[in-house]
Amino acid sequence: MAETIFSKILAGEIPADKVWDDPHCIAIRDISPQAPVHLLVIPRKPIETIDDAAPQDTALLGHLTWVAAEVARREGLGSNGYRLVWNCRDDGGQEVPHIHLHVLGGRRMKWPPG
Ligand code: AMP
Image (cartoon, rainbow, N blue to C red; front, top):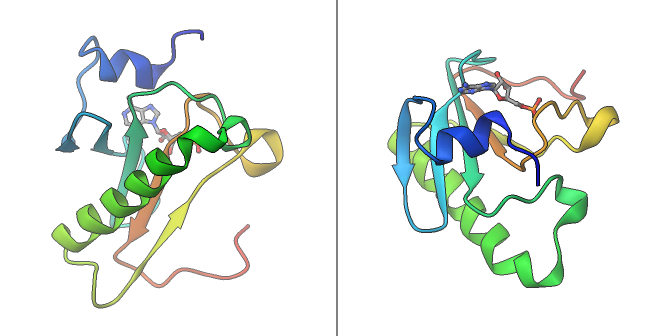
């Protein structure tokens, strides 16, 4: 798979504000936050889009979801709530072709999303 900004962050070639690091994933602060708290949970495994996830990735996807909830809790978002988002390909607004779960919180989210 081609190099992306996230593969470079995972390789330590580009700095990031890391809030979680384990054998399966990292979580970092988004460089252009769309909410008072905006984190990205990024698997070490380079899967291009959530549409490319395979049945053998389900445990990893579950872990990423748990990490998202855990980092949200650590940011104090647990009681008021927050939003988790997977953007997928063009219509979903995905810019970086390495899956990442957005954690957005600290303000009231709108529905439907834009
Ligand atoms: P998406 O549009 O779902 O692909 O989201 C990509 C996200 O990565 C955007 O919210 C960007 O602001 C964020 N981003 C891009 N480069 C960096 C970086 N170097 N460090 C942290 N976040 C980044």
